[in-house]
Image (cartoon, rainbow, N blue to C red; front, side, top):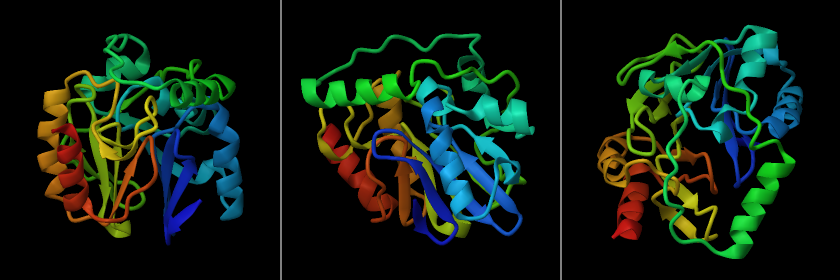
Length: 238
C-alpha cells in the first residue's frame, strides 16, 4: 500500500512493515511476520521491483512479530539486516524476551490478533543469524538515508527509524495507534513493553523530530505529525 511517494506499508493495521523506495534501491523497516512474505512480493511487483532491490532491513527491535522474513531476505538474497546492539541477542535467538504482563484486554480484539498471527506464522519467525549494529545518531548508507533514533523502553534496543527524505519515522512498538489486545483506537503506549516508564521518557526524543508520518508496527498509520502524536500518547498514559 502506497502511503505517499516513495513510502509504502507492507501488511495491515495488525502487523506492518514499511518500505522506502528511491532510485538507488529500497530500504525495509521491520519484516512483519512470515506469512506476510507474499504481501511483500505483491508490493514489490506492483512497483516493478524484486527482493534483490532491497538494500537493507532495519529492525526497530528484536521481537518475533518484526523479524518475519528478515532472515529469508538475508539468507536467500544477501540483504543485510541491522539492529541496535541491545536487541541483537533477542533478534538472533540468543536471548528470550521477558514475559511482560499483558495488561487490559478484550476477548474479541485479542482473538483477532492471535488468529491472524497463528494463520500467518506469527509464532514461527526465524531468528536472524547475522546482524549489523546500529546506534543512536547513525545515518545509514542505505536508500533514503535512514537516521537512527534511540527509543528504549519497549525493549532495551528499541529504535525509531527516521527518513527526512519521505517525511516519515517508523517507531516499531515505541507506541501504538490501536491496541491489539483491547481494540482501543488512538495513540497510546504499546502493550508487551519491558519498561513502560522508559518508553514514555523516550517519547521526548520522538517529539523532537519533525516528521508528518509516524508509522507504528501495530495500528493505523498517523500523518498528524510527531508532536501531536506524542501529546496524545502521554494523555492516554495518564
